[in-house]
Image 1 (cartoon, rainbow, N blue to C red):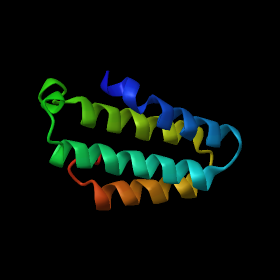
Image 2: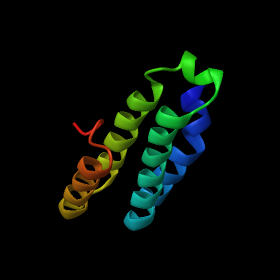
Image 3: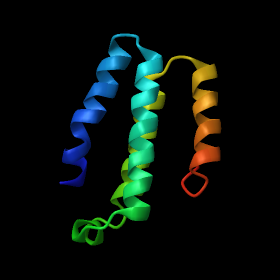
Image 4: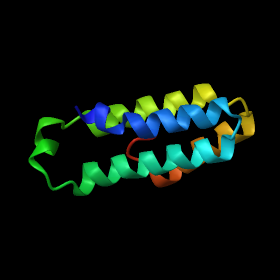
Amino acid sequence: MFEQALEPVREEMRRLHRLGKQAAAREYCVGLLRGLRRFEQDGATEFKDWAIDAPHNVFEDVLEEWRKGCRDPAARKAMDGLVEKEFPEWAQ
């Protein structure tokens, strides 16, 4: 259920990759990652208790999916730096 709610945003990120709009795909990815962290930290719903590991697991999946769609090594390196800086608790 958690992943289903995020699927439209993930599909838009995929679509942007297919269209070659790498900067826009990156922004969708970063926005989704920030939203996942915010939900994990601040989510005030009982659903959060049912999906304790979901934000982190989806974070990893989304980031990996973006990496697979990104053909630019410099962009991947920049994303890795952003993840380490903004999401140190989830950086791999």
